[in-house]
Image (tube, rainbow, N blue to C red):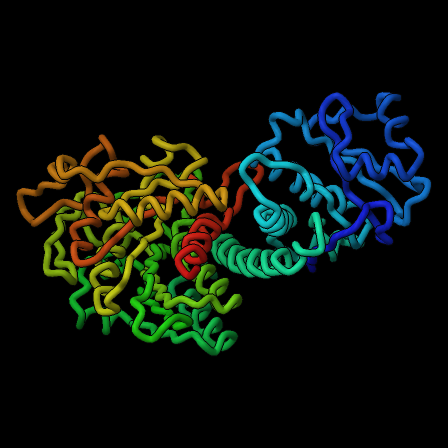
Length: 496
């Protein structure tokens, strides 16, 4: 999909399609009023007949509109003007993408970026229009023998800007948003693959493929023997029951100053999670292929950053393993020694994500990080607490937490902070080791983060629990690509 920006009146656009908005009670947007005037009141006449009243999500095609150069006009209902906010804007952009894509028009000039959204400027609207369009038209058909392709798919979208002075910043917004979309697509593609294809070795191969594509990337893959030498007993306890060997994958991107400390991202990469000996229920276990969405988001961010050549130093670490029940698998009650030297009593082998992460979090000390952010589909408790709207955020450094919360609001990939109080650490006490790997049912998301916090005392750290947002179930089953937009906005802000 190609995106560009343009300044000009809608009636003068020689295009397959021009898109304008109509608010509730048949109120024309500014671009629609210009079209109405040029066409001698054609739009007003049509609306007075009752063909459309402007409810959010309504669409109406108009052909051969007098005194216009376009082949057709798409009217899009935007709801009540006073209620037209970020979710409404995102919703109508998605409606446009899907409607035009099915129409046979290969190009569209979209004037919805002219609509006023409280607290948001034109560049935000352009960025959102690019990412939402790409998101709406995403389709995963790699494994289907017969592809369900659109006959004449939408290929080009031109986004309106108010004046010629907005063209250069608008083009930059398109460039950045396109790179974010490329990274998000990689994240979704990897996460949607089944566990018999996307295993730890496959993730390592994808990292090496990124290295071939982007010459600025360095990639290192540690094998189980390497991890054994480093004393990563926690991570290796997870892969013990699987025939698939664990991998620790490191990607380095150096786009900033040589002496600038890097941002480090650590992704949980459980490519399939049966729960191990603490076996999960069978219902919806297929969705445990999504337990590597944290790893997929790290690879997606690395791709997006390399694509836009962001001036920042960034390290991505993926702790990849498969959690399976087997004669060699870790048992509940086993005690393992982590890379940090701290011992862990494993009371539940289905709380395995924190075991691979804790060794990865110790490993990243060698990069002398500015900050470390881990991303993990870590706890079902996060879904109970926050549903499927917000990423759970916990941190040992308030400014970092605030930066991430702000980036989430900017990108509309929102997070919500939970407390990381010392009192919760009490729930991790063990009679037989330095700590247990679970803290019981109360505050499950918080005690999981408390566990990880014991391995992050030497740097500023934040934990993103994406269990509720990384994928959708039911009819729309599939990966969402979150929190790539949040992380990219955070990195863009930091680079700026």
